[in-house]
Length: 260
Ligand SMILES: [Fe+2]
Ligand SMILES: [Fe+2]
Image (cartoon, rainbow, N blue to C red):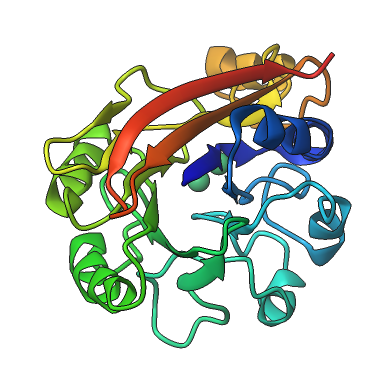
């Protein structure tokens, strides 16, 4: 079993790159299942059904999200109609949608996917991701040994701690949110694949997917600026994880592809 995990998809350029590159990437790498973080897919913040529809043929099985999941107001209602989109699991009870699910891979295997928000240097309006993971991973493990966790968080320490905490209980703990891939991909001692951050699908001529000029203005003057999304020079960053029949990782590999 091989799983492809794609970093935060940013805006129109990100969506176009996923649509253009992922089917071929899946085929080239021999991936059975694909997860992508969608939290920035609609204009740089949030998700809409219309944007998801553009990726209908892209062969992404599950979309995870993060702190920007509710940035597009209509998605509060729409999420209940897109069962392959996950909001973070450790949020206030009663938020629409769900934070984990069981899905079917191309080889017929069942894959559990869990989306968690970190708390360190985040807005803090979340429950403990470690306790949420304890509860949900136990539930998923009753159904399948193939479990992928998206830890959407700022602090590398919190992400590493969660990876170690879940080592041997899940197949992979992969980070999102910073939009910058880290070079720490590894298989932990008990067989969990780990990487602090997978990166993004966004412009390589940008600041985290946003046009350079307003971000430089804001940093250099302290004055407000509207951060527009860059739609050119798009680079797709992802990570591929190979699993054995028991759901333990045997390999993890960083992937980079530029949209021509
Ligand atoms: Fe993001
Ligand atoms: Fe985020």
